[in-house]
Amino acid sequence: MKKSIIFALLIVLASFGVSAYFYPQMPETVVSHWDINGEANGYMSKFWGLFLMPIISLAIFLFFLAIPKIDPLKSNIEKFRKYFDAFIVVFLLFFLYVHLLTAAWNLGARFNMVQFMSPAFSVLFYCCGVLLEKAQRNWFIGIRTPWTISNEEVWGKTHRLAGKLFKIAGIIALGGLILPDAAFYLVIFPILFFSLYITVYSYWEYKNISRKHKNL
Image (cartoon, rainbow, N blue to C red; front, side, top):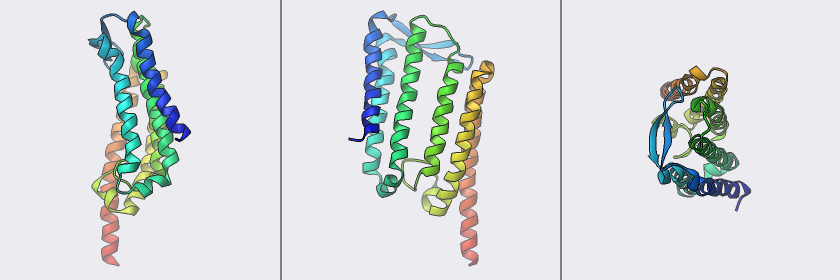
């Protein structure tokens, strides 16, 4: 088994370990959701508040492991497999970080949750950008619009642009550390705008390439 996969599994196990360790110390009802200002506004029972995130992490880990085996274009995934495996680790570390913040809050620590989430989103978006730049055409990973899936050239152009934009979104998200009142907007708005732009761009490129081929 690859070292990155073993490390990813250890992260999942660590999240279960955190839940088991802190379970006796937690109140019967725990905070599980915060609003855009970082104020608590959602609650769960102690069990689900502590174990839902590890269960989701385990499900994601197993799904990520299955992707290279079930994708019809699995040979393409192998071309960027090391980047995909590294992203699995980053993604699970993101979930573990959220889990630790949630546990800390419910143990009495008080901080602006959205502000503290900003650097995690920053790293996640930036690493998404790296993965997108390396991704070859497949059915599970990347910008999967009808136009990228249908055309290798459109896939390449779209993902090179998407990689740059996701990295920019990651850098912008980091601003939430300095501007906590704007943290939510610095995280959400750029990634939503860039995602919409990339989708439209893939259609536009597909139409341009199709038009050129007709004129040949």
